[in-house]
Length: 250
Image (cartoon, rainbow, N blue to C red; front, side, top):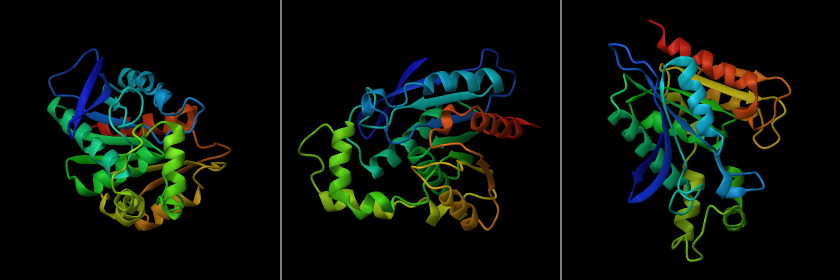
């Protein structure tokens, strides 16, 4: 079902998958997050396959699953900033809580996975996180903020030539938002870290770094031969499905 989410006055395109049958107890809820666009279609085609994945997760687990486009991607309004995307995810959590689910979990790919960790660390309503190919930091972007700003424009996630008004503030978010600094606050809530051993966009060492920062309290799964786009790898999706099914078990 097509929906929208309000985030700081911006309309974010969203898709809500509800289970066909609901028992006496409300189903669990999952917010499913995409990453920064990398494909040839850029921002315009970002997360196009996520509604289908949300529908599949709902069909196979009985969960309510909400997926959405971060600001600046798809048909969502606004321009990309890392802090803005963090706010968008918080708004999605609010939206799913309003659905009356029995609990909220987060799952995200790449940038979305890192932000899911950051939101969970700060929001006790989040009961667990599954990340796919999440970076431990955004230091690669932060090292050359002007170059990354131009890349963001080329990918279409920034539409307005006057954005950002404050480049220093926009760039500071790339340095300040670091999953590795806060991931230790997620456990004892369940934390799944899935990463491909052949990921050439985010090195698999990032997953190991995140796991180490939890003191060994994360479930680390390295997928042999897998690249960065784990959403399309059936082994990674199977890990996610199994993680969800264990959360729903009595």
